[in-house]
Length: 168
Image (tube, rainbow, N blue to C red; front, side):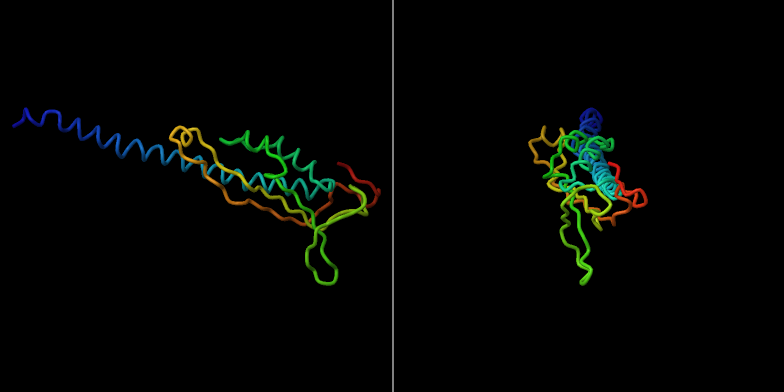
């Protein structure tokens, strides 16, 4: 009887290892990386909004986008943010209507002057998908992430009203 069960324990361990332990380990690693990217996306958006609130206004937000692409947090999908265009990193400026208090899209004839400062800036990351090498190896699609958005009131916007000039 002992001779017939000699390899049963090794076989049971192999089944447990390949069927439960390895997939559970990879699931934990994948979920951890996904949450890391999620947290990085939130902080990345907040940092971009803080930069936009304290630096010169440019209609297309190119200065903010350039700053964000240079200061991408260390993350698994870093290159996707560094190569992101205006369809992924969106910067919008708003002015508050004095009568209703509603926010409307900001427009001004000039850029970066003390007379041309928006009231609110909104920075968002949209259309972002978490791509992992393990997913593509298995033939699985990338994971779409939610839109990350941060809206802040403009602070100095890089302008010094006493001197009447703005600095980029």
